[in-house]
Length: 154
Image 1 (cartoon, helix red, strand yellow):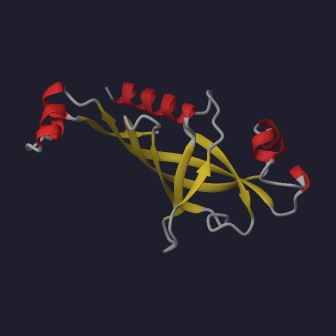
Image 2 (tube, one colour; image 1 turned 120 degrees about the vertical axis):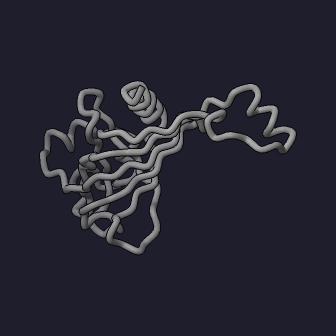
């Protein structure tokens, strides 16, 4: 079942690739970042940012993800590493990314980070009819009636 959880997670990420990310050694809050996904590289993703961003130093990091429909939740751990491969930087460049960087790929403050994923906890929400009725009535709900929780290696 954990393979199915991973598959649902990656499908949800592809539909809405926005995460909250923070460095583990930092006391600064998480911030929203847009992940660049590669269907053949499901153990990593990339993020365009600036050299003065709070996560630019890289290192051990945590990311939180919530799908648009609030049916997939994930907490992801891994390591942020500067991506210097110009082929990768070019591969994910788009009009949407360019909107954030007026000087384009020539912006001297631009950098790309690769998030090397290690593991995650994934919650798949699929509330039973009984649980939904309990929510409406304010009755106690058993967590097993709401969905499933998985610890996975990515």
